Amino acid sequence: MPPDDDTESLPSSALGALDFLVVEGLMLTRAGAGRGWCRRNEDRTLLEDFSFTLQKRRSLALVGEDRGALFALAAALVKIGPVAAGSIHFAGIPVLAFDSQRFRAVRKRIQAVFPDALGQLPAVLTVREAFREVLAVWCPRASRDERARLVDSVMIACGLPEAVQDLYPSELDAVERQQVALARALLPGPELLICQGITEGLDTVQRAELCNRVRHLREEFRLTLLVLTDDLAVAHQLGDDIGVLHRGRLVESAPAATLVSRPAHEHTRRLVAAAA
Image (cartoon, rainbow, N blue to C red; front, side):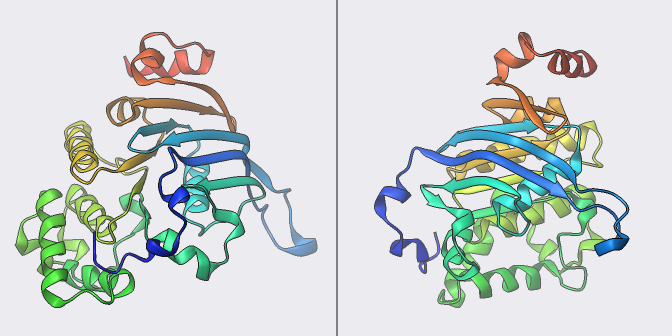
């Protein structure tokens, strides 16, 4: 962990909570087209009465066919997207009750990686410059040597050669860009890593390579992992437990091996059959 860990000011009871992430009665919506009296459609419900618990150092994969809903959930968890109703607690901390300033210390402990298609890496910055930008925000008091050691450690863990640091995102392939995104997310020293749609657009071999990398990172950095995906195979590879979303609701949740071998809900059975 970088030396300037702002979580020291948070209560020890919150830091040690076993139920690390608790989401209760969450409702997420998407605004209809147009504005004001010109709006043509009502708000669309993405998730409704949605609840789950993720324990510390565990991995939960949520599988849903609506990529927009999965992105909205990831955005809500890191407090960059709206929440219509419900509550989110991270390590005992009421995320939605915190304003931006109070949430800053918590945000350092929660990092997210999104689909490559969203352009999450700044196009005008080299990898080295993108890393410096993150370190300037989250590790401002770290020395140059400390920053260099931190960058080296995440680069090695993510399987990236040093030469990559001098390249722009457009000069990398899709897997390399996601490896860089993972490395950048690890720089602040998070405890919870959210991976939303990180294998979208990849072929079978690339998906397997990236999933293996994430599994390795989870163990090396002792992460709690939340995976949001529309691919049951990815969920099975990365999740200790799997939850299945259908039409905005959680319809089934079970240990990964149990859910894949003995699916209970009709929609889950269709997903398992399609993945066979």
